[in-house]
Length: 425
Image 1: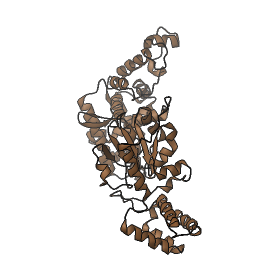
Image 2: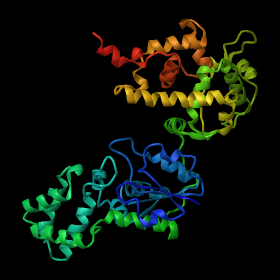
Image 3: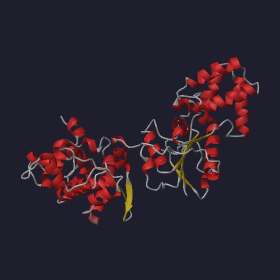
Image 4: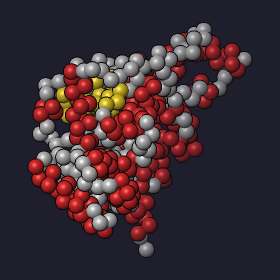
């Protein structure tokens, strides 16, 4: 069993517990990280730090999905404490003072645990409000502060934007609030113990100990836990990744490459639709696709093509679906996907404005005419026959591959982007 610890500024990289052979230290969690195939059903996830300001945060349904398949999930200290307080009825475990404060609604804002970070090292540069509250309570109990001093001091500290709440800023606020005795006391305690008052660190270490040695803070996940939705399927399709022949490649892009570039993918898609018709997932009676089309249309001759009637979204959670849609994939195909993804990274380095979305639609349509060898009047039908819901979806998908395709064609990316067009006189 592996314990995946998602942690950033709350714990230093050299913390002893993070070196335990069962622990795999990972960066702060973000949207999509729990779809990693390296997280087995028997593993434990400890959520401590997470992304939520500079990047999309981990969604609740992503956590529910791993809970539903048996993964033990423990949250503490920072974003993990917030998610545990929200999801404890569904089996997520919470550990520590910060978690209990969120669960008891003593804390409600995510800014309570936020810190400014060094962009290079990830080290915390500021104090979170939960630590400020903790040391002020200690000071009141030690008679360094009175209750009447504590409330306005807390309010003044909370008014400081979290990336600016450095230790120097705290001392300045203390001077303004006539609480220099508290600032001196705090400085003295911190000189003897650099971790004094760091309740987030204490909670994070407690969570890792609980994962390693118990007691287990997690309850059972409900047997009827429902996590399926259109959005969840899209997230899974976007983040599903597999290592094939030494290449770590997104499964969704491997399938998309086949949809776009395999000349026989129309036939493969018909085979896929026939398979779904014979083995429907809703429990209804299976039948060959031709029979289903006849029952639906009543036409023996010249019925509409099945792909125009059944526009089925791809669900990559089904391994058999992946196998069918990648049945024609070759080693050069996988290398091309890797090369095209690398071309996107290179284009971003060379052109600050570049993203696949900046590629103009008319250029993508021109490439699809080349690849599919058809006039633009037939592209809509061709896209649907290849499993896309529309030509617009095919164009959006193709944009991810355009930088690599243009590189192979010896054509500059700058010739086809919106940003360049806007900049031209």
